[in-house]
Amino acid sequence: MQRYYDSNMKLVGYVSAESAGRRTAYDSDFRPLGYYYPESNKTYDKNMRLIGKGDLLANLFGSVSAETL
Image (cartoon, rainbow, N blue to C red; front, side, top):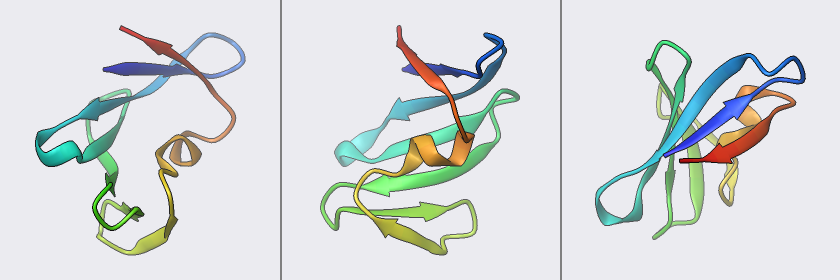
């Protein structure tokens, strides 16, 4: 699981690897924000609206840095 922090080192969210390679982004309260499906190489928001091609989950947090646990 990766933790994402803003420029003030405030935790803004997490990205977790799940079954079949799917990755899920969560906010700091662990509510889902979006999903990345590697088999289709597409990222979707929490309402399953297409965001774009590739793993764009970090974009859901804005300007952040990642720390891998």
